Image (cartoon, rainbow, N blue to C red):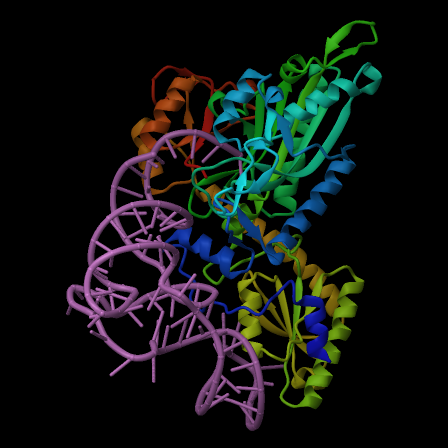
Length: 511
RNA sequence: CGGGGCAUAGCGCAGCCCGGCUAGCGCACCUGCUUUGGGAGCAGGGGGUCGCAGGUUCGAAUCCUGCUGCCCCGACCA
């Protein structure tokens, strides 16, 4: 009965799977640790298609948690969802010069629309008769198709602002891929907005940057820096790219979200004009912004440890797992019943709970499995607990255990979940602060990057050439220019060229 | 696209140099019994076109040729 129930409800989330007892440590080999963790925690795997991954139920559940939090934040800021086509006519794509240049090298192209049986009897071939008149690009991003559509939607200032988001997949034909961090196809959301004035569009781009930073810090428990990208790192077709940058445990930075002020570039390329209050034809102002499944990679690399995944309570598919412990059928019946009773109690206050009442696995195995998969809190209930009205409570982040009264447990767990969420953030913040250094000169800069990693604050002369040289020599790039860079106007000299600098910028090696 | 490596059961590997009988091991899987408060034990069992195509040979996982796929390292990227 219990076995049947488990299968019916959870077979898709936690399949029977052997956990490796020994995960390679972060210190031994960070990237292998990352790869093994993703696969062994059952989040994703490589697929039969080169560069593309299969997101497995547990990984997808994390994405769904992210989606629902973000989607609410988008709606709360006045956005609505829509959906635009996967395919973009080649001619659209080439209308904005910088945009094409930026994406041309990594586009998948559809050239035919039909297959046929090979005349030589060797399977299926592309029918050469079925060549498309105009090739279609599989979207690497949707600005072009969206702006072509917006032209028809916008006539007057009364149609503005237009605040639309879409949840979609995109394809960028990458040479080298890594699960979640860089795959040929990935899932994301892309917001595309149209405004009557420059000020409003810029404010929108900054507002969404704030939304992303809020999400990263309060849901993912990842501290992020907000800033502006240098010209080299700017989105193809944007006037300005704002970003949030996070620091991973190996000292490399990861761009966790971007928000672009597109100026009138796309409006001009796609001829999107509106009639202003003054009865004048004007080009609209645009933004776009996105975060992707890459965030899952950021989540893993920020919090997880040598024992496996560590998930922040707000995004964990299950916040609490309850493991019943028993010897006899009677004990099984009693502890499983108590576990479900507890689950009901916890669910009632909004906690996501799973009872692991599989009779096919021993408790020790379950402990190890849920620990590896990063469930924030584990409760164990055995015969002794039934007698004493207690539970054993274990925290994933600290790996500590305690016996506690079952009385009022739901309030205790609510508090504890908050505490874990905060503790993860604080720990990550502390690590980032400790990994952020100021370099007074180029030698110091190189020394820090080579031996310590992390963010390096340094003066820069503001030219793309200097950034390029530094990149070539050290592999570090400017991750961001602080938002208050212009106002602060600290003066100094560029560590590379010795020319005047307007302020410190963040350098790091990046994913 | 350049350099290196790998391809044998679901996964991880051994066997290959030096060809030979029915291709083996660990984990996973199935059955039974004993177990269950930190990854259970024993017994039995199922599962393989040895990446593909050709060649050498009485005989090929093993030797030769060609192909394909994958992984790692470098130039591009959220």
